[in-house]
Structure formats: structure tokens, C-alpha cells
Length: 163
Ligand code: NI
Image 1: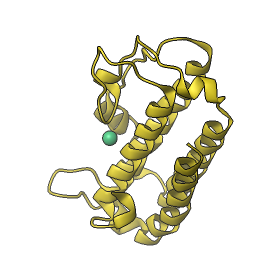
Image 2: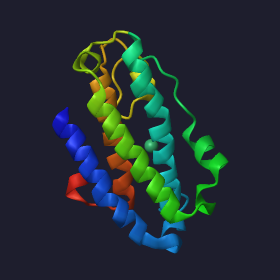
Image 3: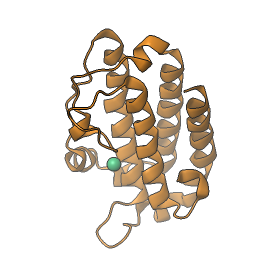
Image 4: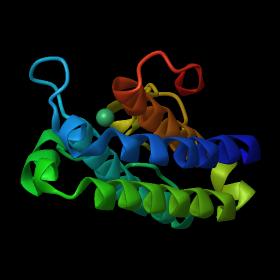
């Protein structure tokens, strides 16, 4: 897990300046026709951070990983990310994720590795876990980072460190 957290921190520190360098106009441009703009993608990643922040904490004080999902398009639409200052949004994304790396590094090994029979990762995970299979908090955390990289790769296609 230590290596995964190091890689997560490195990814955030490497891509925050690259995101910032896109600038306002490019960050607002919708991708692939009706796809999200970079602002909306980074906004979606802030939403993912907020939703997973509480999961990462709550999971340490209960036996299950049975968490609610969230309606991602509603969250993006409601917050008007395209109207938000790009530098501020990137700074929020960077700081929130560095905090989550800190949270991950403080989770006790027992909480990370404990197998949870009851979970909703067959519905809410990025890479789904079958309902009959046990899931772990460590898996949920790694899955969070995979999801972040997936969306960064939409903005920076073909980068080897996002695969
Ligand atoms: Ni997503």
C-alpha cells in the first residue's frame, strides 16, 4: 500500500501543474463532442474525493463497505464547474488529493486488509467487485486512484504513468 500511496502523491504533484498550464480557455473546451470539459472532469474528481473521503474514514469504524453511490452528472451540473476559476479548482483538486493520500497513510493495516462480506462495490466501484466476493478498504482506496488516473488520461491521453 505504501508504494501505491507514493505513486498517488507523485501523480497528483506531477499533474497539478500540467492541468494548471492548460489555461482557462482550453480547460472549458468540451471534449469529444458532448463530453465533459477539463474543468468538469476535475470537478468530477473533486466530487469523487469528497464522496470517498467519508468512505475512507467511515470504513475504519464499521465492518461493511456498503456505501451509497452518487449521481455524478447531477453533481457536476449542480456546481457549475465551467464557471469556476481554473487555478482555484486545480488547487482544490491537488490539496484534497494530498489530504486523501495522508488519510490513506494513516489507516491501520487491520482496517485496510480486513475482508468485508457486505459491500456495494458491485455497484459503486470503478472496477467492480462481485457481490459474492469479499472486498477490502485497501481495494477501495486503490480503485479510487485508478478512477482518478482514468479521468486524467481523458485530458492527457497516451501517458504511460496513467495506465
Ligand atoms: Ni468517473
